[in-house]
Image (cartoon, rainbow, N blue to C red; front, side, top):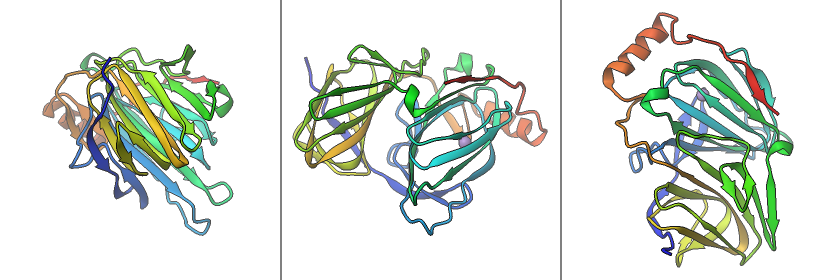
Length: 285
Ligand code: MN
């Protein structure tokens, strides 16, 4: 069994998004344009109670899935499917934009804190123009498993016999939030045909003998097993894996398609008020 090593380190870039929100972006930067099937990873956060967070007012998406995981604070959202809600800390939102969604995402602080992740997951060509769908899960609905000095939240996929809440057959995404006490290790099988990454957001960790600091994404090399060890302050990280689609990716801002003409069509549809073709009902817990 081959242990996965670090193939590439990607220190997150500070970028300004939405109406002036600073995010740490790792996937979707010049260093790592994408990691099939993942198109973007943003780590957003604020620990300054005086900071005004402008958020992400109304904007479109087409051709992929946005997956948002709130760690602290909450996020008010509304979309063209008619969903409106307030995603609380520990909760997750899975939105398949597919043929087109227009939405707003407004993260807010709770007790001066706001932290979370947004991951963009690509859709295969056959689903890019399918109907949008939406699922939202509260913290209580996300299964957790604990071992000695370890706690794992299973957001998507399977871990140790625990099935996550999000099912994504197109790319079979695994999404774990792992917290380790100082010096503790974590191990998991990880199918060799999956592209995978780790992003440490608390403490630091060691992976295959290499130190992995905070706010650095590690793209994993090939192998069937994954192992990591927490440093002296412990570590908390997300481990994400997915089956690559192997299709051409043409991206322009919030539209991700296979061909340039499809991007031009998306712009034309948005301009003509035809981006949103259908409304889908909200599901989830
Ligand atoms: Mn959005």
